[in-house]
Length: 143
Image (cartoon, rainbow, N blue to C red):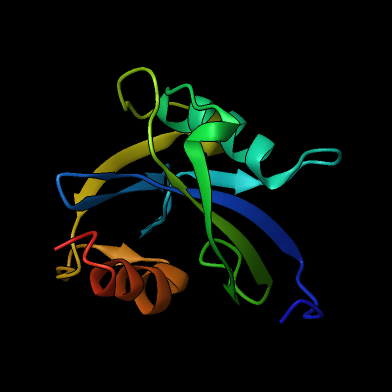
């Protein structure tokens, strides 16, 4: 897997409260994914996630609050035809209230708390639908 050619490299966070997973939907998009975003030049995945959590859901997180959950590959939900590499981290604590924020195309329009029983109304990115949510359920972290 490490040698796969990917066009997009993201870092995203798993936030769980009361056995439900936080997912976000950007303005004009239909899929929900966990908060996070594209790694910028010179950033580590953890640094990217810390920046993105502040920008997208208005919380402050520190490196010690993050534990690696895994690295996943799939077609990008927001950019069909491109392979996405997602470095995913559990977020254990944060400061602030989780509120949708952002600017322009990066605006978070909606946040939801979901469990493993996805409704027809909730379209999640394929990494979450096929890998992350089943693993969280198997680990007994979400209902």
